[in-house]
Length: 300
Image (cartoon, rainbow, N blue to C red; front, side, top):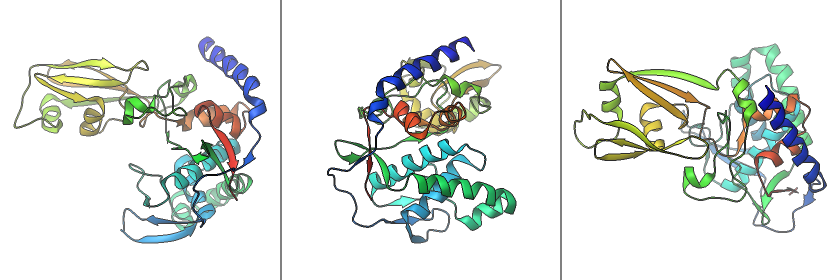
């Protein structure tokens, strides 16, 4: 707990220094879409629908944070999701593995139950309305507002995940994530399962399986399998791991894996945002912490 409080004190000092920049300004330029409707493909049915972006955001925020988040976390998620939608411009889907999750109000009522839906939907609608038209920009363009469930303790530089280091997607400490139940996961595979799943040429049963490179945040960058090298992302995908922040050991032909965090680790940690909101931070403070060098712009 001492380290957590130290981190929070550090954040507070940072916030004091950057508070003058929290004012939302009108957008001075940028190639923003003329329409505020978005077109989305339902990844389960394949159907394409067009919806007002603010209504779309309600379904995204609800899907991403669930029915019990605090208002300021909902507002931070709304701004991030709006920014991401404008950054993408077209080709949005409801697939949470490749895009932003989205569930219709009818789907949410079925999932949460009527009374839980009404209570959460009112708060989510308020969060979207109170941040209407606000996006995060860098050089007068909407940023790639990436976010994930849990960072495992620190977010990652986008360059180590997607090959392009963006000034607003740099590594940030997020120790608050460690207090969430999905911070740590334990998984087991037989070695046969591992070798069958890994993208190796031909039928393999390697003798050597080791992690050879990690980033400064601890995420696995490279794994060696005999003479082959795989990226941490390839291993995560093949074994369906929650994140690339993992360690393992072999006992009796069983691979015991421990992972920390959930998601790619870039941008805003949703668990971190919820924690900070509970501590009294507003949505702009939360977003300024996770996305560096950004400006808030009101585009309509």
